[in-house]
Length: 357
Image (cartoon, rainbow, N blue to C red; front, side, top):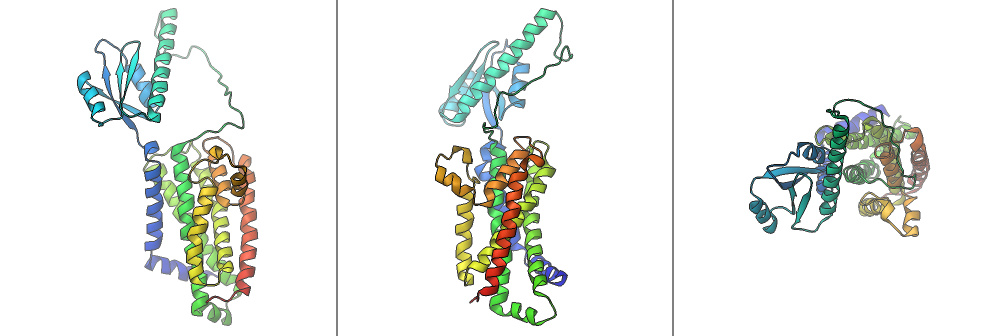
């Protein structure tokens, strides 16, 4: 088993381009689809010279995706909106604001809510200062205990993480599938038969291939997550280690699924045709492209329960945006492990009975 594993690692080192390409594509597509979520939205802003709005501006920029770029000329700001250089602009007075809309987009309502909340917060602090007759913003006068009115049925959407999770889980299916695909090539070329005639046990052949596929797949997805965590600075809500742990059962499930496909097809051509169909279908059904919460078809929801991506997305979003512990997401993790055992058993059974052309 160790010899087979080492031989495959050496082959990967000699020919790393497929691995590098799939990793780069995963990062690229997560950037393209989630670009608006990863980047700050610059809003040209005209501020009345008599206004003291530093606290309001700080709140807007720290609590939202918007950054305010101050313009000294109001007419120039309006021309920038009219010519399409910016989709919207902002005018600020001491106690009021105005949004100049060039393109009607979701950012308009979002900016309106963010600015309104910032003004309200600033007014509350001013009211407290006036009532007490002293500066209190930097002093702890009392403790506030907050509670949420959300229920377990409420959905929290984080575009950053959804794009990252979805496209990473989708693209690395190809990496694992085509690493397991080497079993088909070895069977077709006769290498598999020669190893059977040697002193290597059949379980060692399977174990070596499975271990290689698992480690290559896990290395890719962990590398992608590290890029977004430490370079792009995506917020994992302090649960980055938990997300890496949850990836283990999902990688096992995809290795098992690829093994099942290898045992199901009769030729290399059939396998190369089946992988894209299965990967894209699972990504669409399992919520990699869009949240399942917006899907209204009960039939599609039922189908989503049959694919591993659904449970991986549930577990990853559970420990991040919902703040759940590993114990609280054991249900999707257990389903992934059961899928791994079932599909591996079926795949090996089918491979032992199939002739590969």
